[in-house]
Image 1 (tube, rainbow, N blue to C red):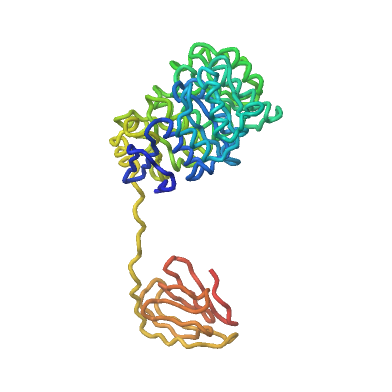
Image 2 (image 1 turned 60 degrees about the vertical axis):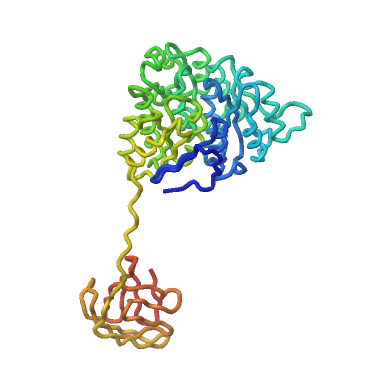
Amino acid sequence: MVVVSSVVMTSSETVFGSGVVDRVAGSDRYQTAVEVAALVGGGSISGVDRLIVVSGESFADGLAASGLAGFLDGGGRSGRTAILLTRSDSLPVVVRDAVRASGVAASEIVVVGGVAAVSDAVRVAVSVAAGWDGVGVNPVVRIAGEDQYGTAAAIVDYVTSVSGGVLAGSYQTVLVASGEGFADALVAGALAYRNGHLLLLSSPSAAPQVVLDAVAGVRANCVVMIGGTTALAPVVANDLSGVVASGGCGVERVGGADRFGTAVQVADRFITVNGSPREPVVVSGVGFADGLIAAPLAAADRPLLFTAPDLLAGPTHSWLRQYRNSIQEVVVIGGTRAVSATVVNETNQAVPPPAPPIIPPALNLTYASTTWTQGQVSQVVTPTVTGAIGSTTFSATGQLPPGVTFNATTGSFTGPAAWNFNATTISAGGEYACAVLDDTTARCWGSNGCWPTR
């Protein structure tokens, strides 16, 4: 288990599991976001390179921030961007202090959402916390549209402008999720962040024109709809198929029967691209805040899964069981009201901790005859050994290079660095001898004073 011991937890709600589960939580959603930001920063908020600030009171405008974070970080390969939450009309003290402690310049901070979601007063407070003296233009960038659909499209415009209009090939794939329910967009966030995809939002019944324009603008040739037909009706797929470029997957859907099933399918998609799910993240499927801040954790190969607060969701439990042999750690985000201790226990049962390493018994070798004698440099060494390979009782005669000693009781050779090893078996040819070591490697020595090599 990888223990996140370097993250400073300050809430009484923080509970670490006794198995593979680690919980990251604060006293409220704002402090939890700060704790997750520290995890993104490698154990300290000062390790963060950039910050994105979104509303912690309404989910809509912040849903597409994961794609922006992924662009800024190159999917976690070129930076560490954390997402912080704020109240709409005031900056929480814990967030203000985190901005100060991060050392991130105001020019490296982005507010996502309109003034109704994150007021200008909050934007100013963030800038001041980041060291702005209040002179000139506020250096904290705001990305916003008329609504959540426009804000997601505005992120696409921002990314395109920053890149000079030349986007990496990964941006030919665009993810689309419902903008009227948080769940599917949140599970898409990890996929968007890790793989360099942009995330757009759509109305459940029809794709807004601003979304169609964004897909056409980046010449996307693959649009992946996240969610079932209740979340995004078939007509949305028809709308998108009219603007998607040729040469890719076209328009496809990844969705399950509900938010829990969709999260599992997105996690499988994540694995298909990125390999083993070493450290999945589990958050509540009935609240948006904890999932909103989780996307930058995907840099460590962490797909996002949902659970009910008091019961590990069936699809999530089955998925964890399926991949239990490759999972090293499960990160739970949120306090016990969001993800109960019962869910943590069920997760530990689904993904039992790895068995302790098997320690081989101490060597107890016996040698019928040990007449090793020290030889000279470049002297031909002709040891002889009787006893089958793999036996623990054998006789040995021969010569060792200068400075090498052999303990017949333990099988230990000592001398120059290359000779410090323990043998479990020894065999010999005409002018050489080989030993199988207790770590299963082998070393050999022989004529012309050769030193052993692995």
